[in-house]
Image 1: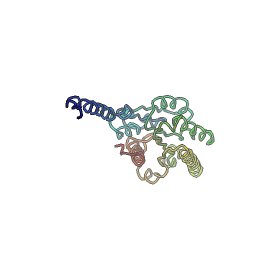
Image 2: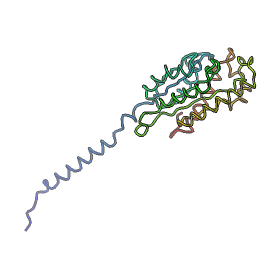
Image 3: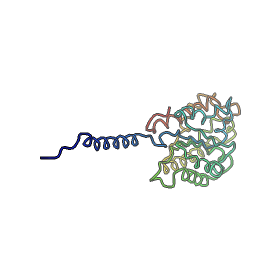
Image 4: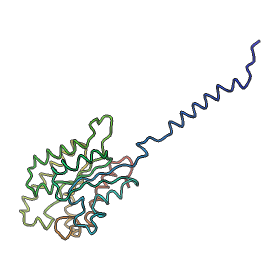
Length: 240
């Protein structure tokens, strides 16, 4: 005959197993720190990021409008500096941008460089360096941010450039935009093609502020719409 084991003793190992399984399941259901933390959006650029030309520059600059369309809780860091060339962006804005470990980065540069007489090869090399520094050193272990680069609009539409030969000006802008597109593509950055919006800009003079150079409040809002559209197009989930 087999010895009979009391029911309580037979039940105890089963309860122990169930309790351990429950603890493991609870641990697996805990969200990671990364999933609970809000994302960070960093804007790099010049006076457009500052909002010069808007009725209320602090809240109506286009990066601020983009931020309003990102998920609730997103931290916004606007590093734009009035008058900045891409060299200034590289030296003064990129280091704090990297430290912020952003999920989104926008960059609009080029017009100040053209006005300052920067050579295109110099600008291209600097753009390559900016984008290289924004990508994690170990890309295999960490996903980089979504980087959105805005190209140069049709400057012939801006009153401040009417003193410049329009043929030469347009040829210059086209050449610079090709360099921007090629450099962005090498780094997987997205490009908002402002130049392609030339007919819209010509039909909407209210997009240009009274200084004849910077966007107006309406212009900044339209730029933000274009940026958010391309972010949504390439995001796993809508950003707004």
